[in-house]
Amino acid sequence: MNKILAQLIGLEVKAALGAPVPLSELRKDFPGMNKAKFDREVLDLAESGEYFLIRHSQPQSLTNQETGWMIPDGQGGFYYAINPRIDNKPTSSRRRGRPPVPSHLKRVYLGGACRVPQWIAEWLKKEGDACNRIEAALIEKYKLVPPENAMR
Image (cartoon, one colour):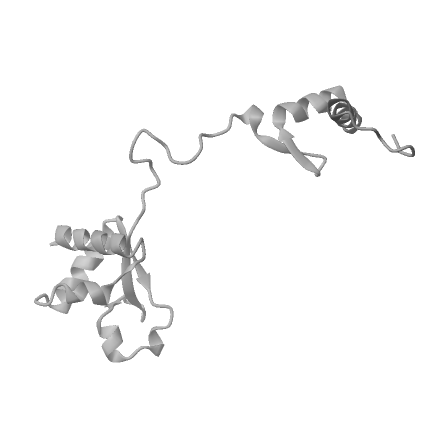
């Protein structure tokens, strides 16, 4: 039974683009099953660690009929939806997103104003007088002409 319920939850989640599946909707798909058995099956899925249940934030605002579709949590609250846990491990050898940046190429703040690769920051610290070196390099590279009263 858990396999059928799990497959149905998976289909519902895909159809809803990852949104949690309301237990009231799932319960409608099992009209012949009594509430206690349905609740136990759902709780078993949650206890497996592959699914998590979502508590209603304001159960006192619900009618008895509305809470009847939910599963009591044993502490006065009610679970109203279920969702599969998303495994953060890659499902294939290809990783998603861009590859990690080697540590020497990671950008670090240089004097709080801009970020440069760590290897450049280390070189500038070793050489000293980083601001004047950067200014001189920009003037040379872009053939800039400093104003007459430029402070150095």
